[in-house]
Image (cartoon, rainbow, N blue to C red; front, side, top):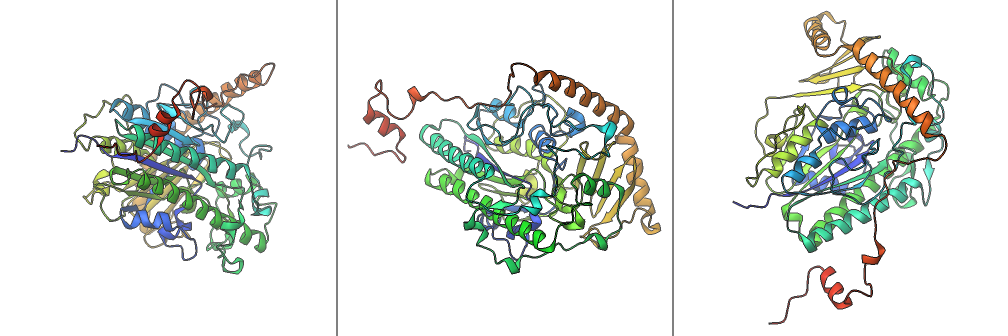
Length: 511
């Protein structure tokens, strides 16, 4: 048996709905590199985030736990340093671990188990973005979404997001070659990008892949569905109920989003090419996913923050040694990736660590290797803006049930109604199904207690943030360490030794 388990390269997008990729059947959007991975690996067709918001989703992904279990409610919740992550577990199994890019860690711990972090984050790491559930129907200004991203969509040569993702890719590629030059143990490298997250602004190169007149409009308009209270609050929150985008503005926003999906796909290609050039591709499992999707105008909604398919679904593709070619239809979610990666690390016989916290996910390695999985379920929780109670999603089999204590329930049969046009919660034909879901929610979640916990957390964080803004500021933002005196060629080095040490493939020694 090979004593060295596979390397893991996990590539994460931000706000990428699988419906807007060629890999998942969009007739226009070009994603050749993701297509190629799916063609030689497993494409998961019902993968979900566990919270449709950046930081909570990522904290669930890292910890394998639901957000209410770790109090990771919103984009300003601290990710406790005491919560074990897959990076901790893989380190104990002998893996070298590295993060390049965004993970939206909030709090003074900016590593969470990664041995190295080679970039800073793109967003602030303090408590500034704390919502207020005691005034949850009031629109938040300054840092909250509005319709400007839609109205200002277009072309630019440079943006902070392009600057960031170019840096993420550069340092991830460099790290791949570092591993190739000095590899003694397997590695887990996470490369996490900000695209295609709004603002919807793209480089001309990617914009020009698409003819403006070919850009498709949303399939489901607000007129096609019965409105629900939470959707109304979201539209109010992002100002979509007041600022009505024109057809041209919607088309341009979708155009830029498609362009940025292709830009992100190009980064997949760059990293896979680096693996190939570093002679590591054959022993590396590549995983591509995202933290949540984007409504992109469907149902009159934009961005995320809800459990409709375009917001809650994520792409999930795995390819590499031992991974089967095909598709997996079982519902699954991002909490499943921690046990999956631990199982990957154990493929060569390494002993699994004891989990320090109960894990909510299950390993997807059986599905990825072509085996049967009896579980067909994904759970989601949203505890952030424009609600005063947790919004719960249960996706099981063909059904999706959405519950919020303050709102009527939603029940969709995705097998017959993939666009979620008809709420079946009051349909007599599905009365038993709806009653069963309602009883399960009541048994598993105490919405009143969660509300009290969230409000308590919000008040604590606002008090701390108010003090942090006064006087000298001690920032939690990550500053990647670099020692220029040890880089490239310096006077204490023999430059020929440095050249030979960093060259890959190395020169063969003369006999």
